[in-house]
Image (cartoon, rainbow, N blue to C red):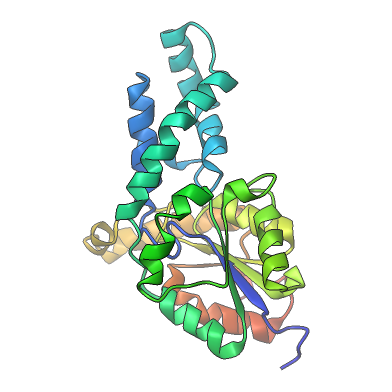
Length: 273
């Protein structure tokens, strides 16, 4: 194996990638918190900015024209920074509590970790959650054997996604580089942007996370034709964002990782796979 092509590290997202199939916890909290302020947002509006830090997520929702208009109608002025802060003050403790019930590992996570351990590949993670939120997740997944080499939360760096700073912090802590021999895996457009901004390979997940937004049981109940349509739509969005490859979920990334090792060129995309 040409060492210049060998993958040295992967960095995974958390919700919708390695835990919380369908990325359910954040969506429910955002809908409930906005409702407390008299603003009804849709699930689609709650999901659209997923992957950003939670304060940036709130800002993105408030910047949606429909939401801005509803806010102005209710409060007589457009939402400002003080409103972002007040909403975040509600989101942070509620989401920190909500994530406790959404820490089940997604199938394939432990297999990917084992692959990394067997091949000397570092396994790092980034997240839109804060360090305080992660404290309610890390012990639960550790009990199941999932202990990555690095965990960096959105409030531990100057800016979260789409900036590459969480990735860079992983690289520093794990002493793993160059970025061109590392792979970012996630289920959101922001994940893909984070990886690209760091100069990494990127793999977008189509069915396990935010782009499809269905629980495991909900997805399994659909006919294959509908699953295929969901896969196509999610793949199209993630590839448009710049993803090099897309997979259904973490359970199906190993063949792509082996292929990246063989190809070695970061210019290859899914359509020539």
